[in-house]
Image 1 (tube, helix red, strand yellow):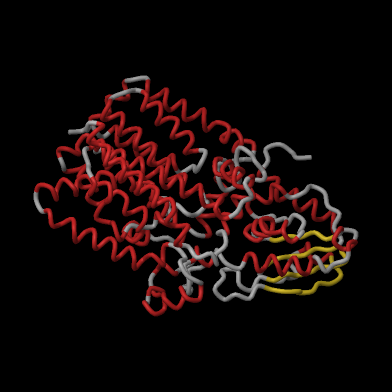
Image 2 (cartoon, rainbow, N blue to C red):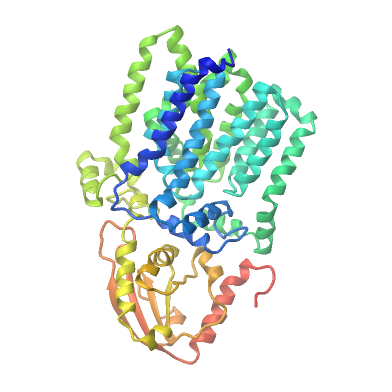
Length: 524
């Protein structure tokens, strides 16, 4: 039976909401309080203070949630609550699909396990566009599932809304729209393209996305610049093998669930009507392989497959081998528990580094950073330490300056993460705004300058080719970050004094040059 009566479904819904509530709270209890926001979270919180229809690295929807977080005081809870909530919403969509298929408790639990034992545990605790991307992938898939089982046009229109909002979250949601389109064309649902509803849905999605598209046009499509930069600095190092192995390792404790779901839609008579999801999966994987995408770019593909896989495994254990459910659940829980310190930083950095060394986990590819070197901690964890201590060092020096020097001192970093972190922590230490020419911070740089002194926060001393710093009479390294486990270990706080008369005009001209490629029309 595809549908159950409300009376029979009630216990299943109770289980569904109980598991969603546990999922919501779990990461808040697991992650050690010693860790700070992730480097990228500082960037997105900064974007929330400069609301716009787009940014150099991402569409605008995340900044809206960041604005709400900033309003409530931008504490860790208000940063993390959004990914946690959308993680719950994603699971609830998965659970709803399972229940509509006729799934019961075991299927619901199997659909839930990946969210608390796999890479989704980390994904839905980081305030980054990826959590919205995965949610909207799942929402689009959910809408098409509803259309398949009900044939109601409203779900086609809803898919257009989900697509538009998804594109306002992350441009790569377009990949799933392409995948679904290919899936529809290759299955019996291709008849849909003779109806106007699908074209109206596409128009709805386009209109929702249009403000960001206009912003992209006015700023000369920075998404293309961003993709080129990623290709040259990061994606070029990703091999096909690493990407495909990543699909397994990201979901290792529960890999059998999504694989079963994929097999079910391709080879089961009951799954035939949902085969478009199989083609969508293969299409997106092919696109990401072609573009050398990172393995986690594909995480949005799996939640719907978890629903199908959980249901299929439950059906199999009811008719063929009841005992199978016990070893698979034990396998997932044991492996997930072992992997937990890789998913979230559950202990102090020093303790985690010792654990990884003792268990030889630090010999795996999970500890290779973007610099292609092996490190003691996963890169994401190393990106969560060192920010506040560096800010306090900066504040201690800045507040030691005379009032005159403070008024004529400009604080600058070429690292968006430090600029974001220091603007996040700075107000409590009475620091002025910290600027950067990195990422979207470039767009917020002033057009005119009155600088006599400059504090630079950076890993390296500028060399003779770095013209801006040649205008100062002298410089002093006043402090530095000393935390070997922090990704930005060794970052220096450097005080440049007594800039000459050419300094301010040169900086204004240089910043205008850096901004120019991102503006279609001249800025005043």
